[in-house]
Amino acid sequence: MEIRIATLEDIEQICCLYTEFFSYNAALQSDYYVAAKESGEYPKSVISIENADVILALEGEAIVGLVHIREVQTPPYPAIVPHKFAEIIDFVVTASYREKGIGSKLMGAAKQWGKARNLDYIELFVLSNAKEAFRFYEIRDFATVSHTMRCPL
View 1 (cartoon, helix red, strand yellow):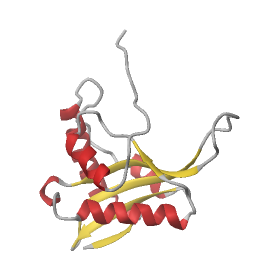
View 2 (cartoon, helix red, strand yellow):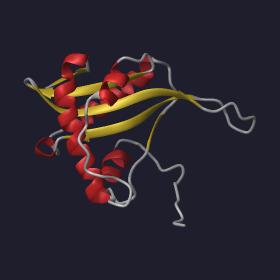
View 3 (cartoon, one colour):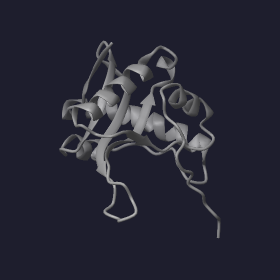
View 4 (cartoon, helix red, strand yellow):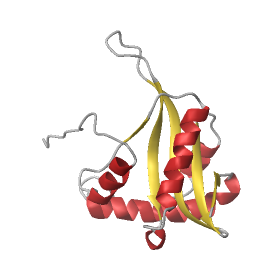
């Protein structure tokens, strides 16, 4: 198992993993997500900026998991305590490699990424009906600090 930062040479396999991720999200919340195919433009844009990375998990030559992480700063509102933090945008392990410790290794790498930048914490968004994801994050010391609520119009 190798954990490393993605390069542009990894785009084709990253696209396959994102396409699987999109299908998973669409199955969980079809009102908001569709099973789209990743073209490569999005991961290329992430790989080429300074305040973000795609961290990969590889088994041999195959990319079996990824975490897209970026550095963020709280808005400059007088009522908010200023923080610089890491935000996980996407976190996925391909279905056939789940429950093998790969997610734990990716999360460890994400935490190291944030610590190396002297960030205060990691934040992420989880779909409300992704029960396995909630368990995964809670075991790794994540706690719910807010809820996003929607009202259909």
